[in-house]
Image 1 (cartoon, helix red, strand yellow):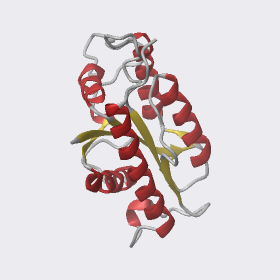
Image 2: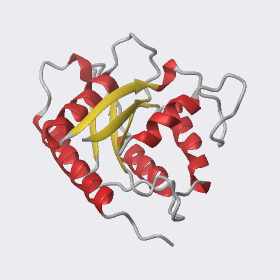
Image 3: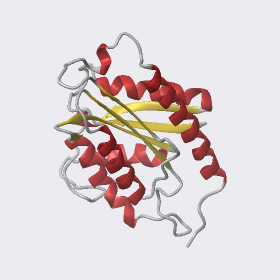
Image 4: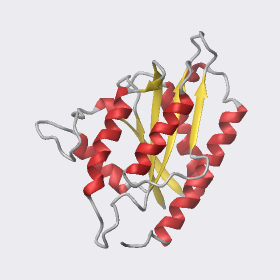
Length: 200
């Protein structure tokens, strides 16, 4: 069975209800029928220090999360939209993943090159497309492979305050996109586990 790790980059610590958590769980639920087991970790519950090293010392808890990241076949990076951008927590995750650029496997491949990443963006303001593009680029830079249609998002109506968690039902376009994301991510992860990228 493949493993997925979802990093929820909400600004709300647990146990606060999070719209990002709701859509992220829907992604994990959609992955399950394709042989992928997963869990959500709320990054803000950990003391993740700023920096671009694997361990910034002095109480840094990123190394604990890093172990889970490296053990997962699929990374689900989920963020709310704030002021039109990804959360500061999501930006910090990308910065910490930068340390993996210098890490390689026994055959010289980037350590994340055999892993898949998908994205989740939630907000009641515009910005989801730009955030998704930035996440895709950052994740690809450190070695992840993004599948076809590997991002799902929901934007609420402009100038209103309805949150995703408050919806009575999942909008059909979001449900369809989530299903496609899960199907493609699981397919790609299986392919990469069976046929890794060539060694340099």
